[in-house]
Length: 256
Length: 256
DNA sequence: CCAATAGTGTCTATCAGACAGTATCGT
DNA sequence: ACGATACTGTCTGATAGACACTATTGG
Image (cartoon, rainbow over all chains, first blue to last red; front, top):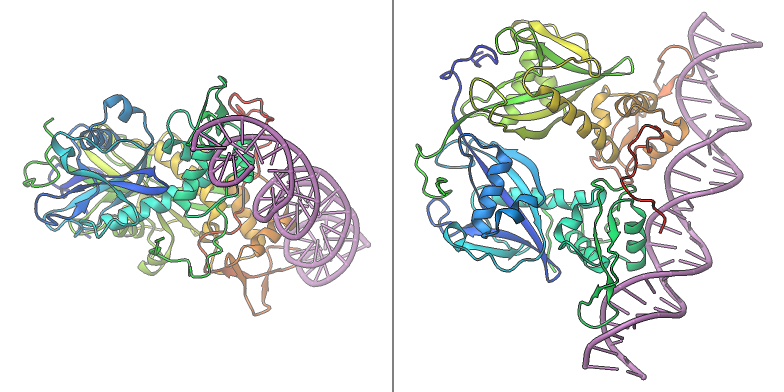
């Protein structure tokens, strides 16, 4: 047994690793789930698309690194990036996940309201929103990270108020429902959705001013903002898939 | 911005980190949640108790390292350790979490049926089960890791079949209920618990042979084993805390 | 007018909690 | 017999899905 003991190690007894963050940044755009990707300019995987990410600085925690990288890739201001929902997903440690060296990557998921295309100086030059279903094979193990991220987001919509992170500060219940329908890939009954959302304390609160906003033609909708609850009681359970062709898969063949 | 670019880095452009795993190993023993701790023999935190853990080997993924460390700390055979439930919790990256050097730690939770005290050669000499409520201040940020682990385990009991990992291969529904009651700190109605467990497809399956086992006096219970489901449909929701000392529902006087 | 979206009300099958009652063990 | 634990059945209030209906906008 040659493991360095947890106690009393010296700085040369451990194997050094590089540590990075990888970001699965999602938005809902035109009723489709989109993910932010960057095109790789170097080998390996030159020309392939990848999740944005980068190295931790010597005295930086992973979440700070994630926010910094996100700001660099999207061109968003630090105010926007500082306030958004960032959730640690899991850490990928396969020794061969990067062919060049030993890299351990902490994956984060971020949820944004629909935004204009990333305008970018610098790193952001090659950043683009992709339909999450159409994102081809990605570099490294990023297909797996992306799939894990989608699973996690879908699950968290059930029992947290996470969905509001996809919406602007003020939103209609129709927009919120659109988020659920898009992420879950199902259609929901509007009256029932409305009832469940309003019955979950602290999920949303009505915006007082009677100003309303229209999404085109039709009756304008009342505006809401996110409440202060993070957990949903009762949860908003995903309807059981009536889809007959789903053997409850590992890799979800999603298309439409 | 002076971040090394994600592409085209050379081996000297990144900061090296040490990477460890930390393990929150739980069991249910005498209706109390217990956690496995080891006593530290060196500074810092000499004499304090800590979660077991250790460094990743140069070509080892985190989960393998977790199993290896667990085997070393508990003296369990590789067969036992190889099959048990190990769940990655999250990764802790605060630059100051270890006063000596930069250490990033991937935390795992493991669930064991009640076992004899860890007998140990080597590292396991100082390992002990502690009541999870009575575990004093731990070394490093392990109090936080332990708290996060308890939260996660409690939440996962609701919508996964995780609870069976606390039970031996064959168990009674009373033992399973005991797991829920202990982790959640509540009492459950037995008939209703039974109905919900049996109604969740794949959660448990009855053991055919009519052999039964007794926990003392009283009617012997039918044995079950874990089914093949990992997710629970419908979930086994935790009863709302009737605890009057709850800060309660935010700001909402909630009706409609 | 019609199409489209927002919002309300209601009916009903199902489900969760509560709990009474029965069965089978050790002492 | 008795206490203790396992198991079954039932009653009732709450809930979720389905869906009919009204309201308010643009064209």
